[in-house]
Image 1 (spheres, rainbow, N blue to C red):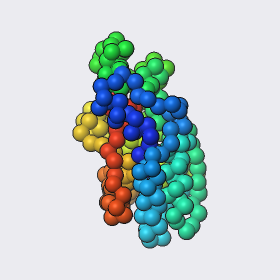
Image 2 (spheres, rainbow, N blue to C red):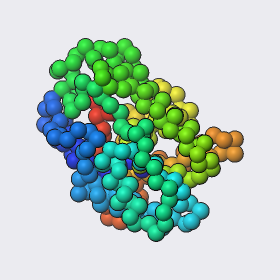
Image 3 (tube, rainbow, N blue to C red):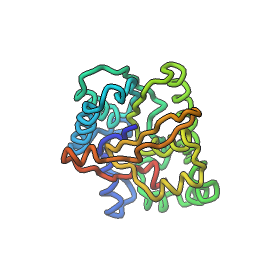
Image 4 (cartoon, rainbow, N blue to C red):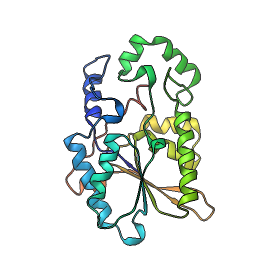
Length: 237
């Protein structure tokens, strides 16, 4: 999978957190947040890397989140390759929905919804669901459904997902069987950089082994800096 390029929302969130503000200044709904200029460069660099892959490593099926920042990353990347993989847009690959906590920084959540922080502490980050939003477990459920459909419709195919930061963590949960507590430790200590590649290979026993963990070398060799912009979906709540 490839995490989308840097978005204007990533930039706005960093500015709001650094400025100690309660609210992230984003005019669009989450689904419509576009790529930043740097994010567009990252997406193009991903495509140029895909174009160098030998035929036996090329993705045969591409599945993309419908969110604008992710869809644009996929389209800009695919424009750089000289073959036509199957292209699918699936809403099950969208980012986590935050409900009433949408657009709030960590400070904003603490100031405006202190009771929700108490609930989160009691339930744990994986199972905590903000009012009107989703838990990590909710997102895992729809990802599990998507993976099952891909296995049925495209058995044995090489699949590339253009998705979100949270997707990388939850694929470890679903493909590798990383347990909840270990998964949250990984999420706390690592960042899935914008434009990074995380990949798995299928073992002989049908399981999956991680091959590349949030790799960014394909960006660096093309003089495009990766950005480690965390999403509110994984950090603040």
